[in-house]
Length: 429
Image 1 (cartoon, rainbow, N blue to C red):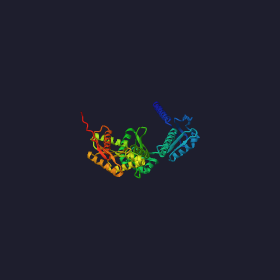
Image 2 (image 1 turned 60 degrees about the horizontal axis):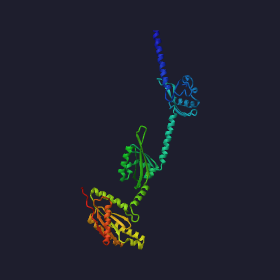
Image 3 (image 1 turned 60 degrees about the vertical axis):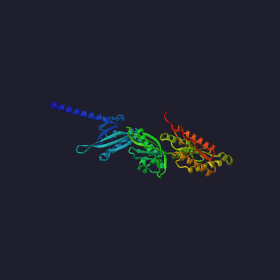
């Protein structure tokens, strides 16, 4: 009987030692933390943790010693304070920067209670959070630098949520749109777009979803109603798992650049003296008309006209008088022709008129009207060549025929028009 009792006691003692060993192993391997258990007199009952050895502390040898013999003097006041706070029910937690080690330590404590609620001790947990705080500071610094760059950027910038909400805009974007950040946040992006560019914007945003980025140029509507040309770039921002979290939008006002480009394009296609299309401009218009004729069938007519005796005006009255005559003639022709007709100055005193839809009879009526109006308005006469469009192989075919008809009018006495038929339609062999 006695032998069985001894065996049970030894088994219980072994189980207790094993339990204590497992608990000590668990405490010794707590990641980045040390745990101390103290009685109400702050005498150590247990001290374990992976960083004790680095601090030169032997946990088991500290058992029975007062906390003041264990904790570094730099940490003692903080430790005693949080212990006092925990015992009266307050949050026992403090974070200190150790000047001794340059490490950041968080100390927390909590009372240990018996089953009936009586406080019989205190548990103190110390955690080294240096790396965590360094990472947090780096994150805050990176965020601060981003905010400075975002807010002070010379181009408009916006952060758009994946749900389409406006999360942040900078002052430059507010200036470009003429709206405050609050007003922009209340708008849908469609409300900013110029109606004529909605389809272009839809195509651009489709590219954004497919490629994580897009770039385009389009118009937005300023708060006062005028259109603003902008260069718009957008990029999807993803988190570490690849999930979209934002869309970063960059907006630059390019109205001045577009205006200059429009002016350059206008100058490239228009005559500087009269403002009419020049030879390059009429060639482009003819090419489009011929291409349309190949698809839908030829129609319309081309007129080429040349002032009679213009060289005499230049030689006797000077080039200024010649330029004035050209401008007067151009204005007279514009007044006589319809908006759908295309008038161009080919150079010198030579003009061309594209009648997009007139047949032969209507073209001849226009030619006679031109002869009459130029004579009446300018006091000089004009020779006009007329030809209809056929199956034109090139844009020069009709121009050559109209030019030949114009020279025929000059040879026939001037102050008149001549007609040259178009080519016969081509047929399959």
